[in-house]
Amino acid sequence: MRKYLIIFLRWLGLIGLILTTWSFFIAISGANPLEGFYYLGLGAFGGSCEILSTLNKMVPFVLTAFAVAIPAWAGVWNIGAEGQLLLGGFVAAVVGTSHWLKNVPSFVGIIIILICAFISGSAWALWTILLRIYMNINEVITTLLSNYIADLLTSYFVNYPFRAPGSPWAQTSYINEKFIISPLISGSEFSSTFFIMTAVVMLIILMERQTILGYEICMTGKNELFAAQGGIKTGFIRLVSMIIGGGLAGLAGGLLVVGVNYRFMEGFSPGYGFTGLLIALIANNRSILIIIISFIFAALQTGSVSLELFTDVPAEVSGVLQAILVLFASAWSLLVKTKVKPH
Amino acid sequence: MWDEILGLYRSTIRMMTPVLLASLGGLITFHAGILNVAIEGLMLIGAFSAVCFSYVFANAGIGILGAVIFSVALSILYSFFVTTLRANNFAIGFSLNIFVSSLTLYLTRILFRGENAFNSPNIKAIPELSLKLGNKFLEKIFSGFSILVYFSIILTILTSYLIFKTPFGLRLRAVGQNEVASKTAGVNASMIQYMASILCGILCGLAGAQLSISNVRLFSRDMTGGRGFIALAIILIARGKPSFILIMSLIFGFLDSLSIKLQSGKVAPQFSLMIPYIISILVLMFAVIYKHFKCTE
Image (cartoon, rainbow over all chains, first blue to last red; front, side, top):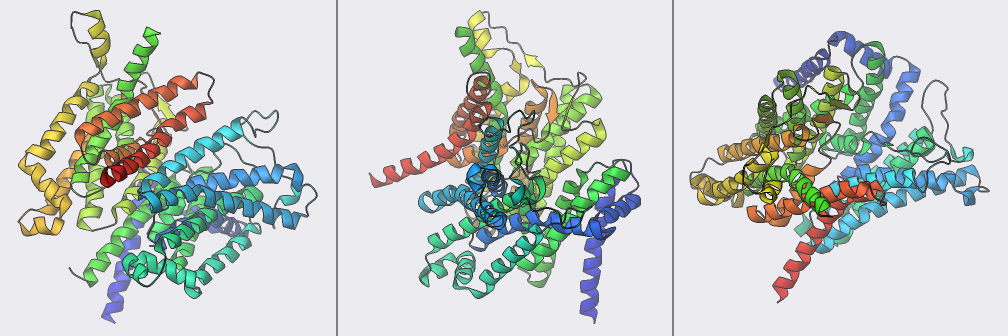
C-alpha cells in the first residue's frame, strides 16, 4: 500500500512541477495561466471536431517519432527525420502533379504517391547510414547536417524548376484532385490519413514483437557484439532500420501532402522531424508510449492555436511547453531509476 | 579585384569567429569526454540574450555579459542532466536545442512583437578596434574588426594552454579518457565536467553575441543555422587539436562568406548556402580515408 502511495505522490509531484513551469511560461506573456489552460483544453478537446483535429495532428508526429525510434532500436541515431520528411513531401507533390498519373484510378494513385514518398525518405537516409557502416562517420553529425541540405534542396526545387506557374509564392501547384484525401467531417481536419497511420503503426508493432527482423533490430541495439556473435549481420540490420526509419519520415511528408496541404511549399514543415525526435526521446523509444505522447503533443499543438485566438499568448508557446515536458520527464525517470538501482 | 579579395578576407574573419569560439567551447567538453550537441542551443540563447540586453541597456558590453550569463545558465542545466543525472548527452542536448529554439521564438513574439525576427537601431553593436599600425595595407588587414575577433584568437591560445599545460587540463583529459580511473586517483570528475561545461557556456555565449550584435544587430529565428553542428564536425575532424580547430574554422569562415558572395551571382542561393554543410561531410569522409591510407602504409 505504501509503495503505491509513493508512486502516486511521485507522479503527482511530476505533474505538479510540469504544470507550474508551464504556468510560468504562459504567464510571462501577460496572460492568466488558468485561463490559458482552459483555452488550451478547449482547443484540443472542446468538442468532437477539436478531438478529431487533434487525432489528425498526431499523424506526422507518430510517424516521425517512429522514424527516430526504429533506428534507435538498432543503436543508430536518426536526427534527420526533418529532412527525410521534406523530401518525402516534395516527391509526393511532384508525383501527385505529374501527367503520367492522369489516367490512374485515385486509389492506385494515392498508393503510388505514398510509396514514392516512402522511397525518397529512405534514399535520403541511406547515404548517412552507409557512411556510418563503411566509414564509421558519426551518424549524429551526418543526419543532422542532412536536414539543412534537404531543406535548401527542396527550397531550390520549389523556387525554380517545380514552382507553380505564375505563383507569387515558392510552392508547387496543387496535386491532382483525384489524389486528395479530403476531410471526412466538415469543420475538422480529420481524414483517412489517420487510418493509414494506424495501419502503419500496427505493422511496426507487429514487426517489432513478432518477426525475426524486429528481434534482430532490437538485439543489435541492445548488444552489438552479442548480436554479431549470434550470427546477425549488424551492419545490414542497421541499414534496414535506417531505411525503414527514413521511409516513415518520408511517408509522413507524403501524407501531409495528400491529406493536409495538397501541395509542397517553402517552409512546409514547422519542425515535425524535431518534434518527432522529442517524442521518441521522452518515450524512450517504446512504441505504446510514442503513441500516447504523440497524442499529448498533438493536443498541445491544436490547443495552442485556440490559445492564440482567445488570449495574447502566441501559438509558438506549444514548442516551449513540449520541450519542458521532455526535460522534466527525462529528469524524473532518471531520478526514479537511480532510486531503484543505486550505483 | 583586389578590393573583392580584401572584402572576402574580411568577411571570412568575421564569419570564422562564432564558429571558432563555439568549437573551442565544445573542445573543452570534448576533452572531458562529452560530445556537446547543445552548442547550437547555447549559441542561440547567447545570440538572443545579447540582442535583448544590448537593446534594453543600450550597451554592447552588457549585451555580451547577458549572452554569457544565459549561456552559462543553460550549460549548467545541461551538466545537471548529463553529469549528475547521467542522462544521455545526445538526448538532453537535442531537447535543450529545441527548447531554446522555441523559447527564443516565443520570447521574440511576446517581448518585441516581432514575427520571426527582431531588429532595432537601439541595439548597440560590439565596438570595433582600430589599430594604429602606421601602414595602410597592414591596417586594412588587421584593423577594424569587432573586439571579439581579436579576443577569439587570444582565447584559442589560452584554451590550448588550459587543456595541455595546466593541472586542470591534465585532470580534464584524464576524466575524458577514463572517468573511473581518474575518480580512483582522487579527481572530482563531476566537478571537472561541470567546470568544462561552464567554460563551454562562456565561449558559446561569446559566439552567440558575435553572431547577433557585431555586424548585423538583429535576432532572427534559428539564426545560428547549424553553425553549432558545424563546430561539432570541426571538433571531430580536428580530433581535439586547437591549432586544427583554428585552421578548420578559417576554412568554414571562408566557405560561409563565399556562399554569401555567390548568392548575388548566377548560382541559386540555395546551392551556395549548402556549401558549408556539404564540405563538412566531405571533410569528415576525407579524414577517414586519409587515416585509412596512413594506417596501411
